[in-house]
Image (cartoon, rainbow, N blue to C red; front, side, top):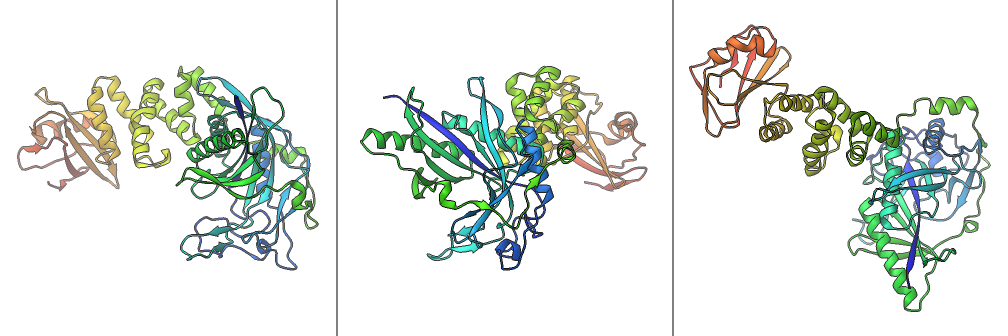
Length: 489
């Protein structure tokens, strides 16, 4: 029998507010355990929650970004259940009237097709604390710092039919919330977590099968592996005469398998009822206009603009718009270089490889867009060959020099280049020798007399002890403007 997989995702995006959703306690990550949970977060007698306006604004912003219906009137409800890291015995969430209604997002599949995935709803709620099972010798530690942190739970329609589609959808939501600046998307810190509802049914059947929920997956790679394992588990179970039971399961990445955690509750098990301490939230036109006024150019629109304005192909454009910071880096590089296609090749190629190798984000790149753009300019005017440009990029990455690249005038055919940066009145001149053998260069003849035209700076007086031998990776001279040599190597 042929089976069809049916997947729906529930994504919990931790909103990037400075304080919690119903209290003024800090949401900063990394504080000592149980130092950021106040009386309101703990639900102590006599306290009253007050809704964080910024959390509402962020939810509205997300709704507008996915072209969703906004709940002009939404209600907070108490979701009652017991868990050690839920000190109140209930979670404040939204049930029948969420703040964001039906919307949709588009995902690009591996074969290039575009698929629309429906979003059922997105609602505001508070996060629970965290149970810590390591280093407690058979016991569990409870850290309540996270209790009360604002979450936007984004619930999809069961529109996905493979693990890869589910990952593409999760990545798209991750991309949108980061573009909007409403969530940092840090999966390692738990800011972005996925629950996957997975079921199978005979191909062609309309009725859904019994689903299992895989809880709290915090990696796209693990999400794909967990879904694939769960699909195989359910197929094997049914084909051997068993039945899938509705339950919550956990994915163990070490064993690459899911295991049963508890039976899956239905909505009536939580005994939802409106929270008596919180008024309904009513959105008016002015609040919606204020919340959506600064919506950035979203990933799909930016991708289409990159293909139209810069002549990039869909693959390059999709890579460059993966994050807002990466897109900005590319555009600044293209502006400095005057060549968008070469800029795209370098950003998606050598720069991306260097970032991945060291596990860095684009905003941690030691090579600035202006530096990379200047390097590309030197390729365009034939100052640097492709091979030499890669060596220069490596040196830039390692912080060996900065500033603009200039070819040093010499009487020989040796390729010798000078780089200069200025800081606090002092200049650092780096001389790079790209020939196979060490070379000699007379600073007085080839540097001092040419600085004014090469670097467009004041004349620099340099004193040396005769010729200076250059190693294959160059030589640095520290000078002051209109002054003698500060440091003589």
